[in-house]
Length: 456
Image (cartoon, rainbow, N blue to C red; front, side, top):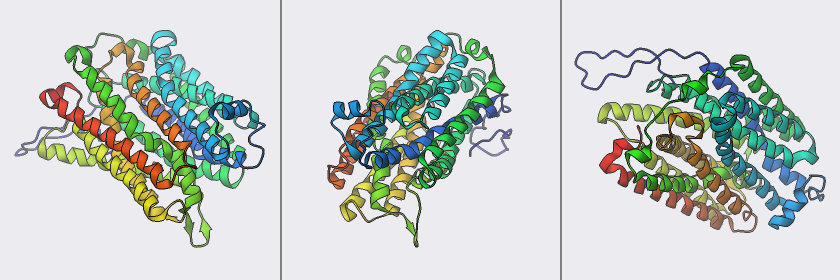
């Protein structure tokens, strides 16, 4: 159920409600999703290499002395070697998580959505290019993270603006948007990650730069000087707080819950990837496949999770009626907790080394299924709290929550080499449990006025 744009017919004798008639694909949707897809290929390609590149560089005896500002960061945090690699990776992911708040504010209040997308794309292209120069690593990462913030929120707002207010086909547009993102997550580690690991690190970074330039060109060719979307987003809209003041607390609980639930997910490109590289059995006969392929597997599993979750909820709602966003989020949270439990059990049974890869794949499958339900539901709840003229800032609270989750993940990642593996993943399991408990509380609070929070 990735996309269904045909006209549904209600046959006589069917007692369930008719499906909403789907509109045609709006002009610009495919090119916008293609642009996002190439941008994500560049970003995910970098993510699949960054922790491994830093660990290899910092273990060569130089301690990263040639990298600008790295010695200062090491002195500030007290981290060295692999721990410093985890700190840099975690800070990059965290900055990329909070940057959409900055970009959205600039887009809605200063430069407009179109200029924000272009500015973000150019910043990311410059950052990926600078990665070819080893000394410029940290400034390059800052440029990529900030550019991503200027790009992500406004692009999503522009996609939303392709549809009329209240058009239910908007869901199908965002489904294509997420499919493009997850396809990028599948392709990027296979191409960019393998190139970086097997040929040269900087060759991988060069491919990431090329992908970003392609995405920027696609956007420029199709949306050059296009300012219509800014006008389309103007107009009053009732806020969630106005409809139900108690939902302010609901949003606060949602923010804390999503931050805790995503702590382990942030580790997939950080401590988890390092554990997979050094502790997992990544062999097929005599051939050892690259650790970055675990990131590719995560992209494939995420695509599967999006599809199967859509089919599951469509069938459930046809048979039993509408399921609200809070219930879907709780279902996903249970799966996330089960996924982290796989890592705890793997550490308890096998320790730090000699871990069968099936444990990791089990974690990634359950985590992907969980987040495929949690993230869209929580995004819908946050989205109801913003006025239409601030579309790019609608998700600020959501991204801020991810930022705090990234900070927690970074702090934990710096302890990966010193903590026992079982204790390390048990802490992550507790984070997931507390996050799931928060969503259960939101679900319980939503019962009296469930329809007032968000559409399922």
